[in-house]
Length: 80
Image 1: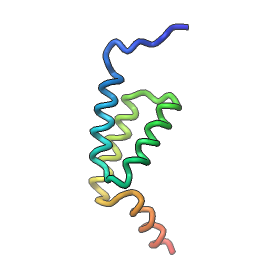
Image 2: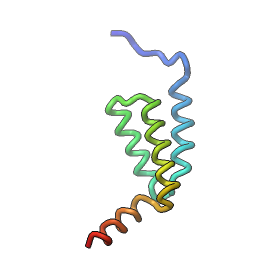
Image 3: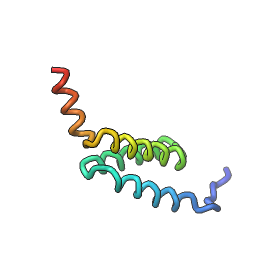
Image 4: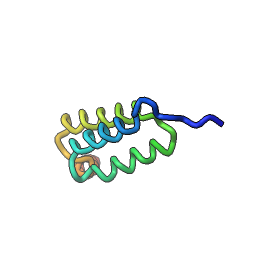
């Protein structure tokens, strides 16, 4: 079995970038997003894909201008 060696330092870059993206989100959503990132890492997603997902979440946050938890309640109330 061949061990993977991070010769480019991508893990360190990923950690810095991921935290920068997460810090741009609403405080109410940060813990959930960190759990989401942990789940993706466990499933074997690579760092570049996870960073793309985080960048998309930041873009959605700028469009929606409300935390996801608040959005869920708002959607439920509009359905009822």
